Image 1 (cartoon, rainbow, N blue to C red):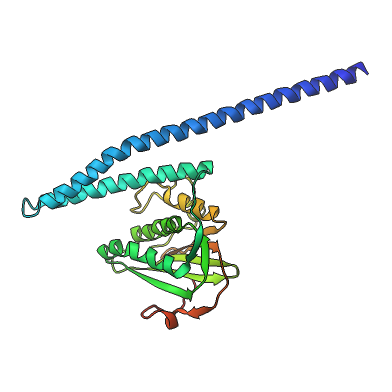
Image 2 (tube, rainbow, N blue to C red):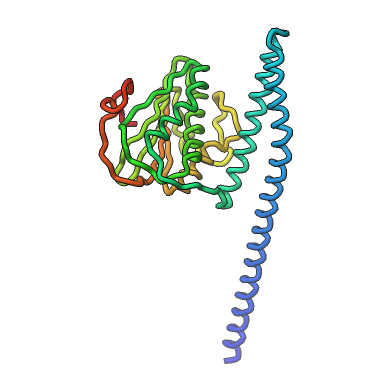
Amino acid sequence: MLIAALAIALAGAMAMILIQTLSKIYLESLRATQLREEVLGLVAHDLKSPLAVIQMSGEMVTQLSKGAHPKLPELGGMIQKTAARMNRQIQDLLDFEKIETGHLAMDMKPESVIEILTDAIEAMEPLARSREIQIAYEGQYTEREIFCDRDRILQVFSNLVGNALKFSAPNGKIFVGATEQDSFVRFWVRDNGPGIAPDHLPRLFERYWQAKQGAMKGNGLGLLISKGIVEQHLGDIGVSSKLGEGATFYFTLPSFSEVKVTPVTDAIDGLGPFTEA
């Protein structure tokens, strides 16, 4: 009886020690996360102000150098592009941190699928045109709406289309589309670039991972951030590809309403026929 009582007391003491240890680990982890958020926020804040000055200076150099030395406009443009790229990378780090800690704010509203697609394409067309790459619709025209944060979904498209542009050669094509899929809407961005190696596919959405070959530049967070945004919308994201046949990045979002679908060729002039991604 005494041995049993001692065993119970010992088990209770060990359980208490374990609980205290786990609580301490949890609190230390929480403090570390909070400290990381604070440091990242302070660094981002301190960097954004000088970056804004650099960007404005680049704009002024470009404007004031008209008719001056032929190299000055080029230098001004380079300053602007570099500042813009650094600003995007800072914002990516902030978004990544918010996704990791579950603090990414969403402004959810019913949004038109076709309007989001139109905005996504129009936003990326100037960059595509400068690289002699065409962006076009494909898929279905749908009056269906999705319940989403419009800016965040456009951010996903910007990441996916931007990624496709990096791997598309001049005179290449990128297709952006959507189709209804039960109670979801399936979006995609498809390119006719070199494709992705099979062993790389499972790693594309990993933190900071990038393929060694290719001309990909950035901080390796774009796809991970896109994944976090889509999943916070209760959707899924994925990719399919074959070497030499391009790649298709797709994601699904829950529909907000059920409405009639009409073929894209009957609804919008100049858009190609439905093509399943």
